[in-house]
Length: 179
Ligand SMILES: [Zn+2]
Image (tube, rainbow, N blue to C red; front, side, top):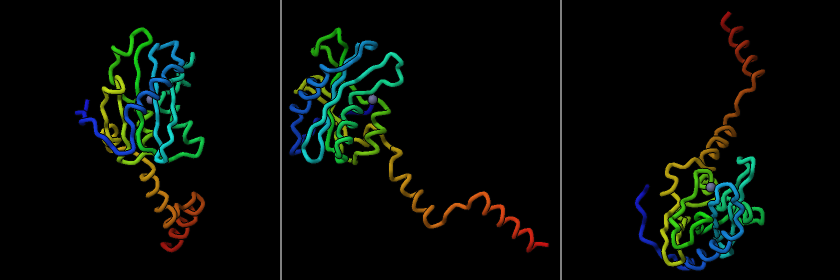
């Protein structure tokens, strides 16, 4: 586990308020299989908050995390610039007093890699007063993101890959000149 940072204070981010909204969203969690209820509150750069909860499924693989629910709600409404996300979670059987910090899973971190900059903040909270803040690169260093494919696209634009037919024609032409 990486060393946590001191909770930082970015002007414009109401950490306690965002955490409270994550706790509220947690109440909608549908987690009859794990009984582990998670809530998230995602703050856009424009200051709008989208919340999410985990949504499990009897077939297991369709299960969606709270963080991704929040991201997909926001993105589906035209938001693609994000500042921070607060995440809270814990078993149905224990009270918030026993909550631990809940870190986003790898799949949710990959969603962040798609849409979030290096200054995106992830807030893991036990309560509105007790939380840790990480910057995105701390949770997913060396991330594979849109920039990796951007470079590939540019290369292809400059030097289009040969089709199989073109390659065969070129090889035939080369063979002809050698004869
Ligand atoms: Zn996740």
